[in-house]
Image (cartoon, rainbow, N blue to C red; front, side, top):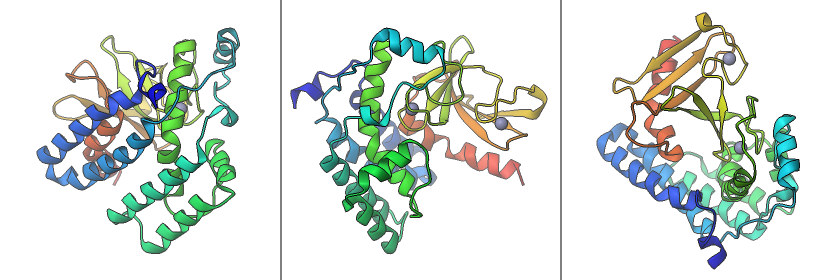
Length: 277
Ligand SMILES: [Zn+2]
Ligand SMILES: [Zn+2]
């Protein structure tokens, strides 16, 4: 029990209460976002209960070997290194599914299909396929449920890896730790950009102009919009049709809250969709 409490300084378990407070404030400030914000708070509460029990995983790879992987563009984490407690993972899948059902994000048949996967002896294989980004059984929201259920373990090992090696020389478009795509970004005070992994929330520096999904860096084909207060921006890439949102640290009065900022920026997603019509 105590091992979890004395974890790394940047522990996600300490950041989460700020996300929750911000989401609750957001729900009051913008009632239209309240359903999404309360769903997010309920999901956070589920993973927080497990986070308190996590121990800090040991990493056998030497700092030099980790550095070598960063330089050669090889992600740091292999599935086998993640210290899953499968009983807790099954519990997480059950609870995350129940939260989604309670919020009517999924219907009853989908809920029971997700519960079945959570109980299945093949769960570790399904999780491996999810981690390695291979096709999954066709059940609605399965990827999201696995992402929430794996997140405490992924984040914890990502924190440990980040303390061992600098990610500054990682110039790829996918996460240096878990190889997933970025889902958000941060513009720093000096105008540089950091991408934020959609799975483990690790951040890494990336060209502030280029599209992190296709690599396009032709300014004429990249459109940018900001919220009226300037806190958030979105960059839309014409060639690949994708976009990435950012917290603009030059305008915001707080650092990124990864769970809260994805919800706070839902109006920006709507604006992007609207502008494409
Ligand atoms: Zn990652
Ligand atoms: Zn693109």
